[in-house]
Length: 231
Image (cartoon, rainbow, N blue to C red; front, top):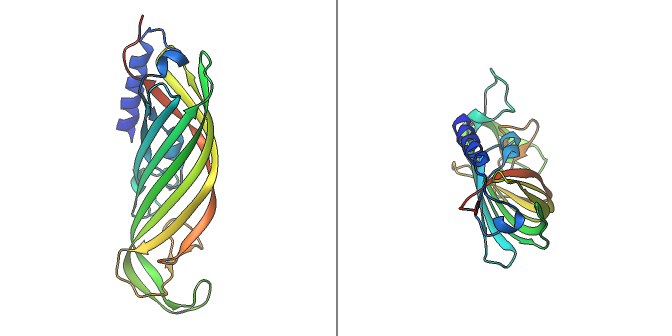
């Protein structure tokens, strides 16, 4: 994680040394590489980078973010506490439309598709022959369980992107939508099992069942504007 951050900070410092005439209008034809710092502090945290590519002069752009995070880099677990053996994979695909251009900022609206996969591998006391969703279980058994938690979400976002002459961009956004959460066992287990969550107290996963929940997207990106500008 520190290596990723060091590379990004180095790129930012390189951008500060550029003295081209950069504003919202001249930057609209350039690719922007972005970093999402708040993703490091998510409970399913990840190092997340993105690329925004303009789609001609239409005022539209396509942004793709990818993230990865093992439990070893999760800041929510204190030292000396057993961390769950999990990996997090994230993908955010966003189509945005800039409806106004000012010298140093452009507001936009966007639609976003989020895909998140969390893979757990742990020894757990699994409830067997359970009456779902909250009934009693016939017995419990300690076994190695590998599960996959998939999240599919859609958001409608509104945001504002600021442009600085140092090639740095700041992207602020908020959005609402819905998400579907589905858990599947990669380990072969019988039906009607109840698997305790590795990273949540008093919560259980029920394989092959789905949850449909409201979803909130809120955050910001730092970006580096690529390409050559006139002096």
